[in-house]
Image (cartoon, rainbow, N blue to C red; front, side):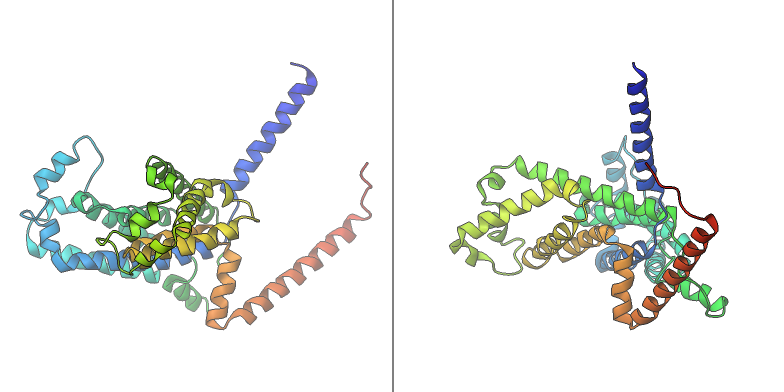
Length: 346
């Protein structure tokens, strides 16, 4: 290999390694991660609260899924649940109520580093005990709980933050950027790309998605119908368009969600797609939790600006940003003056 080729390979490898490190290890504002914590925590609380309607039927030793059956079903796998050792109704209800308290604390951001870990363990325990009731909602709940556990999800918009601010006498700066926050967000982003890609591949295995009739088959299924969409039978071209746009969006999500130019379009398309599932097919919780996952691609600056508008603190945040920018400009001018005239590059 020539010297020129060796130099090119070294520079290329260095650029790739630098891009890799910037992607994973650039400190990020935890605002987006904290917003996902609030929404995902509320979903965890609600979906587990629903188990209260018939807790013993799902998790009791004489319920629909006996412990022996579940262990046989999960043999060779990694399924686990603390419900395997809770056989009395009193023990189950005690654990269930404590779980709801943990989810509430996690949502509010109280002892968030601890409750995040407990929320993940609890979520896995419910899923592991009742595999026959496992749906896409439970999988996304577990996904978000796992990645929220890895990052500082309580660094913003939390009781922990308010508590720290109060102990500091009300003079606590904004939570600093964190590598852990960036890693957690990146993992959610990549996992969402994988989910949509394989969802599209699975759809392409069926002829209804190729012929453009899949949306009609979903609307005409009375088992899932919550809003009467049978009027679309008179608009076959609309049904075909909705079907093909859905597949195209899922198939290209992994590529088009990253560029700044196409990202807003992909995020905007996610809203009617998942809200359509929520409203028209009766899967409200699943539609919402998928949108929570898409929030990982929303910049923290946009999150802070939007919450600032809602809370009326936008002006204060803008003033602080301008002051910081002015201070940074002053420092840069001073550094340039101290360094003297810059050499002209050839």
